Length: 348
Length: 165
Image (cartoon, rainbow over all chains, first blue to last red; front, side, top):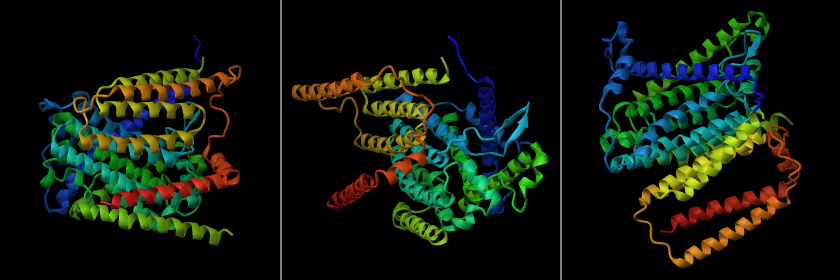
């Protein structure tokens, strides 16, 4: 059997995948820490400060605690699905990172390496597809728990995600009409030369960020785990690291959707007021500056997620559905129509 | 043997295997999950044929929307292997007849294809989104619009049926 495979390409992509996944995990780990610190600051407390200097070893301690907890699988649950649920939640959270351009090209070992795992020309549709799969992890885990409260939490999550997916999709369509491309890489390059997309699509961004909050199950949309109504929501029966996976996938979702928002609307790895093309001789340093710029934007969005969480209380369920179907979808449709009209008017 | 062929074989095995598992599963939830795996492997085939748009739309529509609905219904009605009603003899017969006729159609389609010309992997841009859009809106505008009206009427119909009770 003779295999003709470009080994160097496979190794390159494999290394990139490992780096991106590890970075996502580490950033998500420290996001849990940042969440507690931000909550503490907003509530005029100190926050975790015992493990290590300023408490920076706290996420490690939390992880160890989860690993050493006793693992309980309910007797009347379907075991395979019970284990599959958190795994799927984690998988769909990480999968989106494949199409995000984390930076410009770098030059190593005589090869130009693109800092994007897959530059497919359907990037946005891929994101949309993975987002629509995000509901499986929660639903399967909730159903397999064989618990009423879990099931209600799971059904809430599913109907919430389905409802907000629509408005999110329509706001993305308006963005597509402006940029004329589905590739995230091309979108970033367009924004490097012109204005950021937020200038062209302010309403679209507002709709997108609200839907992103809902898709990540973040407050004010955390109905699936409303603890005063549902005990613990869809993960009531979970313990140990399986519970950790569910909680952790929420933070990865937050990180990835922040990266998507930064890429789609805020220029991705573009540094504002700085002409990248004029400094092409900087080589790898230029790519590094781009990565830092992207990360700064991502961190800002993560902070926004937390800021909102510790400021705004949870919606009631009918308010949530009302906002999704009666306000956001008509608004997104209007945005699409207005964008189409503007394109027709300005590019005669 | 190159990477595409290897992937083709792998995806085919996964597709056929999980289709069989879907039929053999006793629990409806497991059947649905296997069906999702089938959709994913078929999407993989679309990617191999360079029809990326079709691949991702297959995932969004089937795996992301329709299967979620299936799962929803099965979970809400709490269908299990025990609650499944016993199938009667007539239903079996109808199933055999309709399945057999579908098999005949598929067989005739397979028999008439030209086996000398194998499927072209990773080439051809017919499945790429800009090509697809141009074809739809230049050559097939009328059928496209008619089908969108059909979708709209189906949506309105669903709303009306849902409002009745």
